[in-house]
Image (cartoon, rainbow, N blue to C red; front, side, top):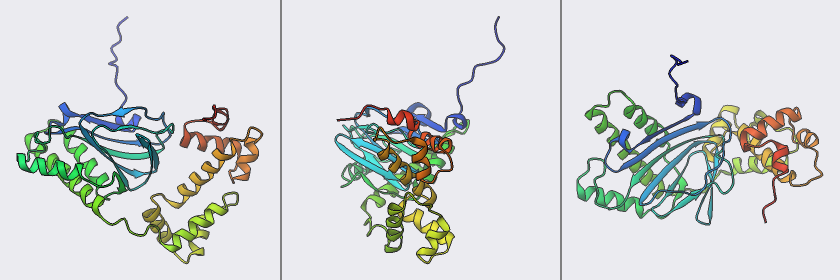
Length: 298
């Protein structure tokens, strides 16, 4: 019997991910634009390579591990990472974490190929500037997330008129120049002494209750100001940072085959082993039991 119900593919709302590829983008030199907002960990990446392309990603929220060749990069909210032509990227055995990520993929070869309606000499100059950046991992432009969202919104209108493509190309140019400026900027001295004291306190008291209002009072900041400064300097809200630090400690302790998960959960301040297991799986993609039983890497 033939059904009258048309089969539908999962929507962006259901998957938390949007991908646009060259035919839909229809901008010279732009191969892919995407965004995801994962509310739980997913299977990690293996062997992602884009020949002759430059990838620029911006981690708007959360943390993520990437490996390019033999170098591992730990991204936190606000960081950008570049992949250059010839790179092969994976997540170093880690899952794709609970996070929000935006990215753009550009064709870089040949260097004088059309790019964003620019004149040939301008396309060459822009490609060379991007390829000559001294570092691939740096604190990113805070415009990046908003610009990527605006590009996706512009290109998913129906129909996409020529004026929309011109507007999208202008947004991509803004994204690229914001990336160049962020990569060249002085990264500064890192976290301030106040926030550094807070991080040290968290590291030394993972097995004790840690409350954001008390941490704020300890370094003489209002709670709202503390949250804003912590997120700006560390890349994560303080509550999520504490949770991730506790989970990292849990992962280390789960290497001991004699550890009891219920005891570990209570020792780290979780209200129950069930809640601990739920949070652990959301961030790692595995239950504590499954994580503990994984084969140990040499």
